[in-house]
Amino acid sequence: MAGTLKPDASVRGKCWSSGLGVRGITMTVTVAAAERLIRIGEVARGAGVSVRAVRYYEQQGLLIAERSPSGQRLYRQDAIPLVRFFQQMFAAGLTSRRITELLPCWDAGHTDAEQRAMLRAERERIQAKIDDLQAALDHLDKVIAITDTHP
Image 1 (tube, rainbow, N blue to C red):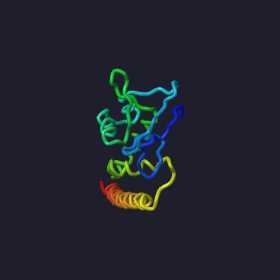
Image 2: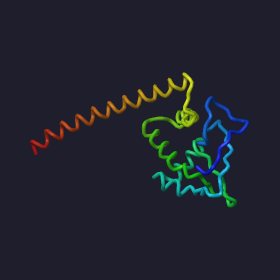
Image 3: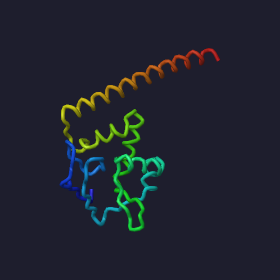
């Protein structure tokens, strides 16, 4: 990435983040001149979400926007895959609060015991959801097979 990230003196929390824009973590972002910031509409289109969703993620502290001199929101280009990640986590049933708890350790690559327990619990919950969906899919396949032989 063209920018450099430095934690401010006021960094709070247990894990160091590389600037994902997490609530409770203040980061100073120095963007190289070559790195182009993108508008909120570009983030929304690139991630396949509404502009309103991007604003919501910002309100929840999941994204950080800079402001242009005219007040427009500007985001780093890595906001697009980050918003896609948020969408996946929301689809899996995680809350914005839970995602906020998860993000500080995402790039750091380390967690404490409490965080690992939270991650494992979320994984088990998602796996149970997958198992339930697979069972429903299996039942639908049986109904389809029966109705295919008896139109």
